[in-house]
Image (cartoon, rainbow, N blue to C red; front, side, top):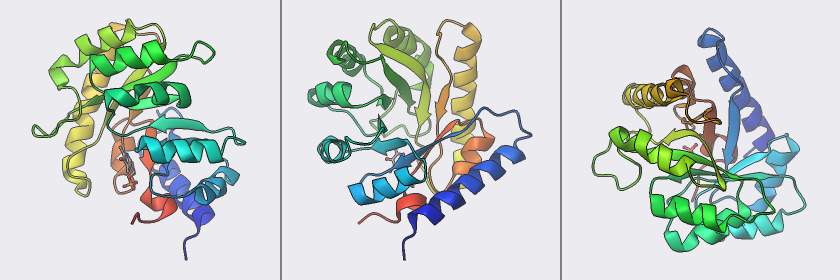
Length: 229
Ligand SMILES: *Cc1c(COP(=O)(O)O)cnc(C)c1O
């Protein structure tokens, strides 16, 4: 039987342990519960365990849940690929977007962000180890892209996000996470971005590896809500 409260408890324990193992220099780690392909009832259960950050990949599905759960104080994170005709709804309904990798998408998000809302928090997705993948900005283009994103008025550039190619191989992921952290730190040392504080990496199978390499948002789906059909 699926037990969401117990799963969340276990994930929180894993996060605590991972933080202890990194000699305690860490910021707080934000737990993002990835609820794609799971229903509103499961989200309510997670919310009752004090989870406030939820991640969704598919806009239509997300909008249905956002409407159904509008009585709750949830911060919604968009973590899927973005088509430019979807930016308006994303700008209107989400607090964060982790998957920005094109200026066209970033400009539209900024333009379409309602003025009644605070700036939209943005992570740039890096294509860290997969040349064939279409998602993510090339590592060497990250800084110049970040400058362009940071210049947009209604966005708040927060940091980087990556999805390693081999989601089950912790050794290879170490490498991808390390490379992302190096880029993150390099940009941080320039001190040109005022809100540069977020490294979004780590999923159910590799959250320990990600935290060991500096992640401060981990995105956990399966180990909270169970497998997806
Ligand atoms: C689905 C998804 C996750 C969660 O993955 P799990 O392995 O189920 O924890 C995290 N990040 C992104 C970008 C995803 O698409």
